[in-house]
Length: 476
Image (tube, rainbow, N blue to C red; front, top):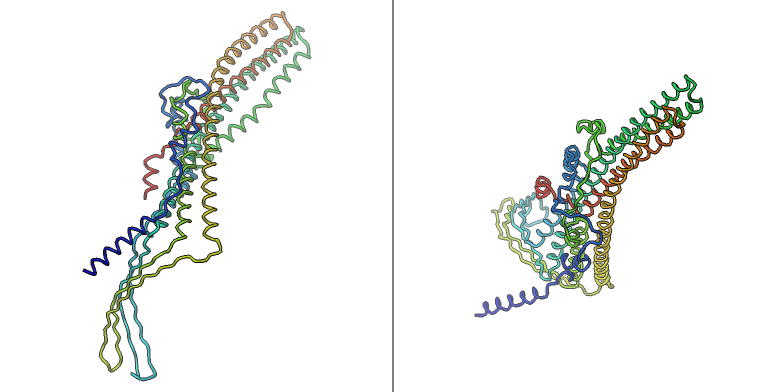
């Protein structure tokens, strides 16, 4: 009856100790935190549609851009390094989980020694094999909290990977838009170069017949050469964007021609609509918000780990095996070796080290909560600003298109009037300048409109879903 009573008392003692296990520091979950910050609706009104924000680069209708972003997301070296960081965090979490379980090891020993003092005089040979087991029971939950902190770090690394992929996709799309802008700018300069070359030829012909002056020829020559001087700078911009795209792709600059980037195309036109998404949904989708919340979870678990240091720690060691000894002239002796030990340590005096560690952990947690709040506020600002830029950019493109049509008409009229002698060459020069200015302004507006769409999708957190291949690689 006595052993039964002892077992009951031991079980009750273990349950009592388990009830004293330290818990993570309390904090609101992500859903509740977002709802306390996010407004009910957006301030800037924009046309909405059921657009998939996860593959937003497909909304531009540019197959080259689509292919480019997909290739960058799979070939970028920074993404591959981020995948390795996720693996490292997963391995660390696995190590922390292994600390909760007993550890079993095999041991073996062999020795051959000579004794010079009796008894007996001669050689002594010993050999043995055994098994050792050790276990540190997590009575007060410190190890389990360390596992929670490691798992939160894994979530943070995965969110950081998604954040990197989102930024990379947006930067690649922006570089592609800048490349198409520079190529369009070269085309604009080429078209205007032909216009000004014809004007120069016209003034020279009129000078030959005495219908114009050397001043008109000099002005036309100046306009043409001033325009030609802008070409090398734009050509350099094209090369810079090609090199940047190559770096994003994890390749050399010479290899980007395979994507037909060197062939000029128009600036991709974004969709006029934006995804139907509430502010709270956008915050929940953003990887930087998820990364910041993972940091809060990690810090909360680390507070519990620090508090668990106040309580005793136990360690159980078991060993069992056989040891055989052979003395010269004597028969072999075999012993069965078994040992069991239970160690317990409890802090008594540490000059306030544990308390200071707890205070520091709590401070880091409060800092992470403030960082989460700031991340969400900045996210809302980015989305509102980008929605406004997208709406205003569409209006600007439309109006500059009308202005370019008017300046083109004015250029044709002024050229015809000058050719017929009804006006002087200054009107032609002014019309040429206006036409070039409006063409460049429209090209720049198209660029800014497309970049605003990229920035909006980035601020909404679109495109951060990890492909199955990356997820599978992270799990191995």
